[in-house]
Every structure is written in structure tokens, then in C-alpha cells.
Length: 419
Image 1 (cartoon, rainbow, N blue to C red):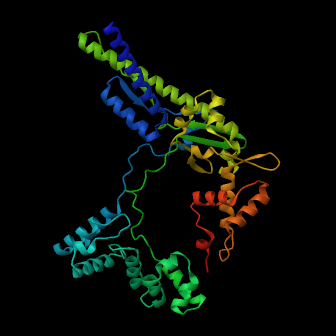
Image 2: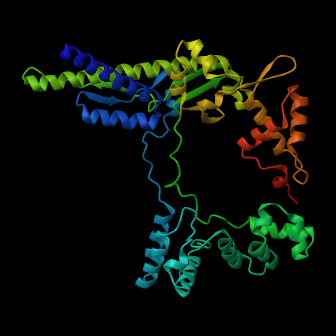
Image 3: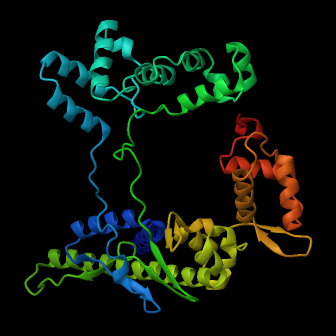
């Protein structure tokens, strides 16, 4: 009896582990799946990973062969570039060691907040001058204000109003309190505008974009191609790899080795089946998206129709959690751009006529209104509400508009105001 219970428990634990792994496999983005399969092939000699390119409706794969095939993209970071330059430029060992210590302690913006703890004032000033000679003005500053002042001194040494604004009124500048600044400096609007333009020309983050610290280049999982009204799609080769079984001669294996071989074969079969289920689920989801969101795929997210995970799960006969996992962190490349698949999901807002429009459409209208507003008299949330409600004949609240605006990272009207 105990043996039977233990066997059932072992079987249940094995099934639970495989189920958990199948779920994880479904929600893995392309790069994680690639890494996972490589790890599996290293631990299981029967598994051989092969790229495949699954396409539907006569998709021409050659059009996209210039897409990156490998995860690793080697780029030189700002730190590496600076270290390389100082090796070539400064032959004095003291100068090199001084700059090396400074550079290795910079933060991601190129600042050195703990400068006074690392160097004496004379050492620090000397290091900044050496960097200035290499055209890295602002690198090594202790903070934003210091960074801007270093650049102003180097490029616009005679702009005293700009210097005063940076030195004493930076918070007012960030809050767009133009009248307060004019009053403090006793200058007119034209002088203020000129000084602000000078400050805008400075670089608040003196490092060039450091690709070593950026997220990896987005690689689409699904690629859409549209010609006239004919739409085709493909699961990209890195998104939908396949595996094959490597044949190993088992005639002369010992009983223990044969047992291990059987386990490897079982693991291979499970993995192959899980990959196929993942592929079939994605194909079912894409065919539904093409059917329901054709205009958005052709022309942009402003044409999204209201659609939820539940809508898809019912249509393709999959559990809602399965659809959620399958669409997580997946990217679609359409003719107009690459975007997260989840961006096609949107709750609905109902118009007075009973028509449903998506939340995303409302957000895009907010973006357009703000983009085209009078910058001297930016639109308040109430005014945006009034304009959208008149265009779409919907009932929304000012709080909803404010919520959408914040989600779009659009500042309030008072902070958008310009001179």
C-alpha cells in the first residue's frame, strides 16, 4: 500500500513539475526561450535545437533576413570609450590613474556624486580640466546643476542670466514659473526666452547613450506583412525554434545507461510537445487578432477596437490565463512599427449612440490634442474632456482624463506652459 501511495505521489510531483514548466515555456519571450532550449540541449544529449520559420499565407521570409540572429550585440560603453581615450591621450601615469579612478566611479548619467570623498579639490578640478580637453564637458560633475554650469562656462561664458537661472532658479525653471524668474532677475520675456534656449542646448546627461546599460534591442516575435488588403504573418525564427532528436546507438548500453536514456527521451518528448502547443496557441491568437484588429495592424493603434483577454479565450477555446501567458512580453512587427502585443487589448468606452470605442483611442486623442495645443495656453483636463466628449459623444469624467494623461506621462497644463 505504501509503495502504491509513493508511486502516485511521485507521478503527481512529476506532472506538477512538467505542468509548471509548460506554463513557463508558454510565457517566455523569445530570448528566454532561446536560452532555455540551449540549456536543455546541454543537459540532454538527445535534444538538438534548430531554428524554424513558421509562416502563413505565402509569407516571404527573405524580406526579414536582415534581422539580428543572435542575442549578443557587442557595443562599446561610455566607460570603455573614455578609458580607451585616456590611454591614448594621457601618457603621464598620474593623470591616467587620476582619470581612471574618476571614470570608474561615474554613475549612469556621467555624474560623480561622491567626488569630495575620492579627491582633493585640486585633484578634482585637474581631472575635470583633463576631461574638458577631451570634449567631455560635464562628465564628472557632482550633480545636474554642476553639470550645466560646467558646460555653460565652457560654451557660453558670457551668458550671465543663464548662469543665474541655473545657479539659483533651477527649480523654478523646472516648474515653468516664468514670471517668478523674470521678477528675480529683472529681465523681460525676450531675455528670459533667450537664456532658456541657451540652457536647453546644454546636455543634462553628458554621457552619450550607453548601450551597454540599455535594454536589448527589441526582436519581434510575430511579423506582419500587408499588401493592399492581403495580410500575412509569421512566427519569427527565434520565437518559434524547433528541436530534433539526436540518435544515439543504444544496443550496447548498460541497464543504468538505458534508464538514463529513457529519461532523456521522455524529457525530449515533453519539450517537443510543449513547443508545438506554444506554437499552435500563438497561431490561434494571431488569427483572431488579424480578424478583430485588422485596421490597427494596418494603420496604427489609434484604430484599436475594444478587446479583452476573455474575448480571445472564448474565441479560440483556451483558458484566459493561457492567453494571458501566451501574449505576455511578446512583440508584433507591423508595417508601421513594432509594439507589445498587449497594446492591442483595450477596455471599452460606450458612446451615446451605443458604439464601443477603445480606451487606447481616447488616449491617442489626448496625445493629439496636447501635441497641437497652444503652448502658451495649454489645454486643461477639463478642456480636453470637453473636446473629446464633443468629438466622440462619450461620457467621461475629468478624473478619467487626468488618469489617462498621467499614464501617457503628460505633465499638467501648468507644467506644459511655455513662454
